[in-house]
Amino acid sequence: MAGDLQRLVDDLALRLRRPLLLEDHVQRVIAYSEQTGPLDEIRRDSILRRHTAPEVRAWLRGAGIHDASGPLRTPGAPALGLLPRICLPARHGGRLLGFLWFIDVDPPMTPVEIALATEAAPGVALALFRESLATGLASRREFEAVTELLSGTPEPAARTLIEAGGFPQGEPVTVLVARPASAAPADEASRLGLEQGLLAVRRRMGARNPLHLVRYDHGVLLAAGAAVAPEEVHAAMAAPVVVGVGRPRPLLEQAAASYAEALQAAEVAARVPGLGDTAHWAELGVYRLLTQFPPGTVGLHPGLEPLLGDEAHLPLLETLETYLDLAGSAVATSRTLRLHRTSLYYRLQRLETLAGTDLKDGAERLTLHLSLKLARLSGRYRPRV
Image (cartoon, helix red, strand yellow):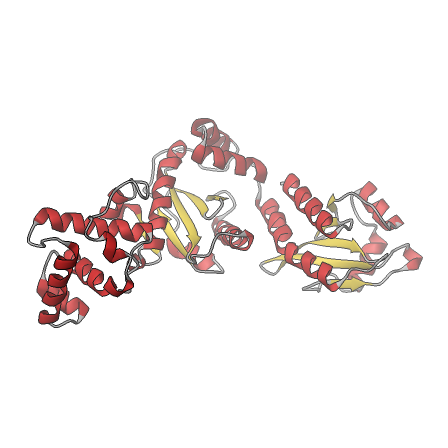
């Protein structure tokens, strides 16, 4: 984890072209960038001794650093050999975890520079929080082991996690996947939100159970024994997510299979709003089959192709899907859509004409039904109901 903090410090210092020093909440030095430009004896001493002198800590506490919720300019103290500084408290969930320090002279930091540093502070706080949770198994080793468990060599990774106390031996594993409900492309802010939410779940349940991992556009939670309730995950997230739940597996080394199911279930939940914000793989019905086919590899009913590309035909497609979902019951379809029976028959006949199909043919009904579900998963069909 120290490597992550050093990388964050170096990256921010490079972007601002200013030296940076990171301390924990009791002002022990954790990481620092290359020290170029103005440098006082306090900075040199802190780096050499790995902590700030008591009299300097007392002076800075009096300047209000422990109460600050945002960037704070601390004046110089010539008697202590201290140059002016910008202090950025690193807080996670209201908890003070550390301080980012910039020397504020030649020239002083601009508002734009301070804003950039402020935007980076939550990421540093999150890394500090993860380090505070790491007990027995270092956070970096855990990240690498869970990554290997899900996509690499599962047996050695499972052994590493179990032997280090990161997962109880002999317990089954269930994987949950959380991904942003928004259709916007994944970015650093969404990944940070997933990380914060999953860490909050871990903190409530204990640092050793469950494990987690954040990937490009989703977060992964590995729970021992009984699965984490999806409601726990939803409640921990700052922004709406959809959650997919895989089936439990008896051994940790088999987690990749549960993960694949959870990932597909989350994808279905994102594509099919009618399922709600949580989808269990075991309850996906026909979507369990359809998710096995890569997008574009299975052709749709040829009569539906032109209709899917025309917004004017959306009511006909919605009517057809509801009719097929309800096993061809006109009574149930009319009731569900609040549509007069005569209007329902008109729509179905109209669709038969446009699609060149016959709804009395069972094979045609099956092909149409599967095609509509595949079109949902691919995003080509987005019903309003």
